[in-house]
Length: 458
Image (tube, rainbow, N blue to C red; front, side, top):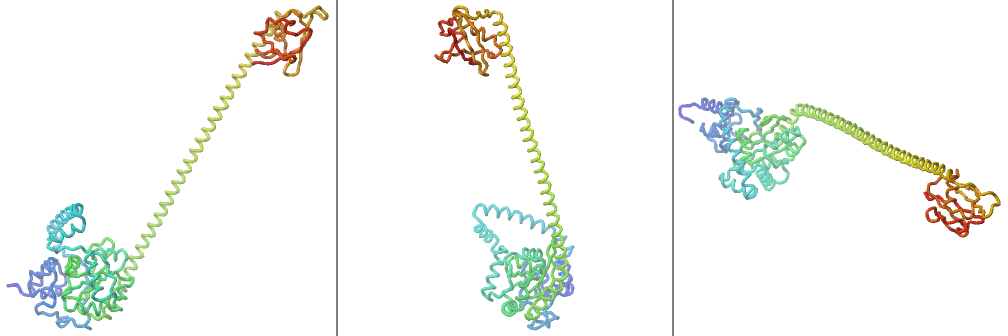
């Protein structure tokens, strides 16, 4: 006992510093430390692990006659895990320093992982901290393997993660978190694991849909941190925790400390699950309603986006059709315009040709010699057949030349071409205006009569 202070004064001091609302719990913690106020404060603040209750000096808990015997009713505590505001204020500088060092260690850890690999970096960190730092996941895996090896496979389905992750998983699934803190040095731990924790009734309840299970060895960092928050007064220690989305730290629903019968533990767990079932059902219904509302909203948003995309697609397709139609219309207009231009050019060319033919007809009519009379000496008869089947005949003198034939043909209405030739069939011979214009009809074997074909050369 600290000099100058009575036990009640020490209990009040411990409760004030550590933010303990339960004075009897503070008194038991002080007695666990043999009246050493400083040691009790360090444990309550989480700086040291709780001592083995079997080593406590005197002052047995008056509620259990100084011992926790099998068959006795276990002690239960229900309280939120929230620190005293004064302690929270006093811890601000410590939290700042802790956060700063945490950031520095994370940076150093990231560099080590990049340089030497994760496993080697973990060994270096473990050696640098004197072996006091361990990975929560590895600790959970090691704890579960140890429990299976020593007590068999009929155990709660302990999650292989940190206690914070387990609490988040239970919160997400709207379940209670079953917590078992294992103190290997406590004389009652092995019996509890062998006779109670592996009992079929207890395992059936813990592994039911109402619970998520997590356990840890208080000698490991993660379990020790949770123990420093739950403040167990003795071991074995079982607790039920719950949390709502967004809540930090969780709430202690049930704490069972010391020896307990399997039937009593199973009953307490089932009763807690039933009591919290209504509240969790309300939370579940609210969450389901939010999820349904969010799903409906997502479906509406998806339908709206699909409608917008469909409208955009239809507008795009309509624009593409309009563009294709406009392009086709432009192509047709271009073809029609080209055809019109070509027709106009052909018409203009034909008109020019006809004007030329008419002009030549007038010119040739003016210079054409008179036709010799019937029966005159040396008269030749020349018949010209045209492509349309019409024919024209005229008398010439044997001394007239082929050019005179062309002059006569130029004056005929059946003649429509600028360039043409006169062709005899027997023997076949082409009489050209340029090459044969000066040949007389006698020399061309066109007398006394001949038939020529009009052949267009345009």
